[in-house]
Length: 175
Image (cartoon, rainbow, N blue to C red; front, side, top):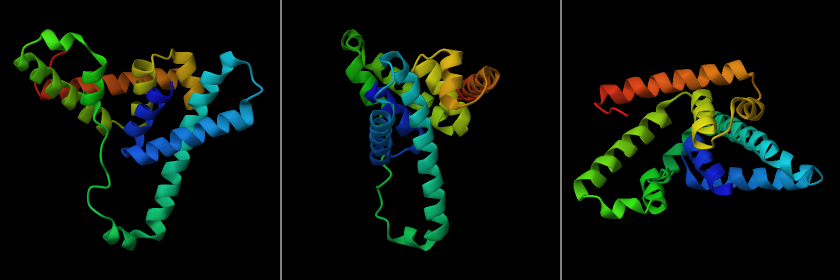
């Protein structure tokens, strides 16, 4: 569960270290405040806590940027290293070893383009999309984790899928 939470956080904040901090904070809050809850309730509680911690991170970043905007000149280049979805997917699949180099390259390019387009989605659409299709949560679970109605989840997912399909079709990628 923590690996999926980490990947989800990386998609949101686009920084490995910040994503790890968010996941760790979420796990600590779950343990501190909800350790007495039944085990079957913990995954949903964790998803909600993770969403809240992510929103808190964005609020802190917004405040920090507003207060210290001139300090960005002192940041070193390369701090914003992105999560490499291709490495994760490559390590997870064993069937690729029998494929040709051309097929593997095409798959890698397609996955990279999908990753780029997912990162371009608005935050709520990206969150709903990742929970529904990456985390494989149902509509009710996603709505509870996001703190919105099931209709909103369906709308966010539909818009995300349409945006991804349009963007990928424009790049000549057919899934």
